[in-house]
Length: 219
Image 1 (cartoon, rainbow, N blue to C red):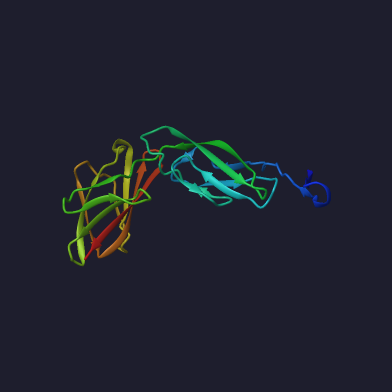
Image 2: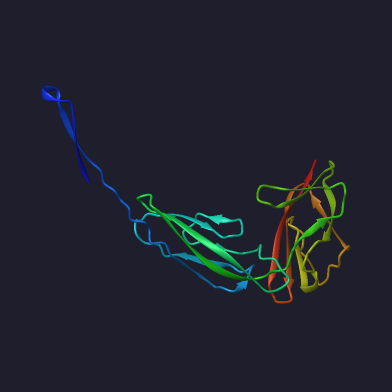
């Protein structure tokens, strides 16, 4: 559109043309994903199909508290914890095109529930907290090069848990066992510094629940 503007009158008048270009084409947002109706520990590939106004900026919201800025992300729905059945997640893709126009699309992803890989602390000398990423932290500062941590099974899906695996994150061999009854303590010596402990629980359906913990021994 073109606008003519005149300022003043007579000999002191002046004028100018103002050209305003308006872009109102929203991006044509779309995506697909595969596979569907799988265990929460399996990778799902999300593929962007957006057109109209490249280059684009992407924002994915997976309905589980996590997001991504990637064009074609992969994602695991590890929060789909439950004894049986399926859970649905409303995955939203928001796209901004080169004209700063924004549009979005939401699709439903169906996920088979995974076992609960929650563990607890059985040592009153250990401090338990969470970080900004909602990861549980087990921490002790006693000035020793090693500390023996004591863990209990806090899983809410024990009746359907078929096996357990713990990767201690300190270079020592994994611990594997079929049963972990409530009240039974599992011990491990951790060295000074941080270690990322990963607990994996396989359910009777074959789905695997995975949860990571930060274990810290301070001096």
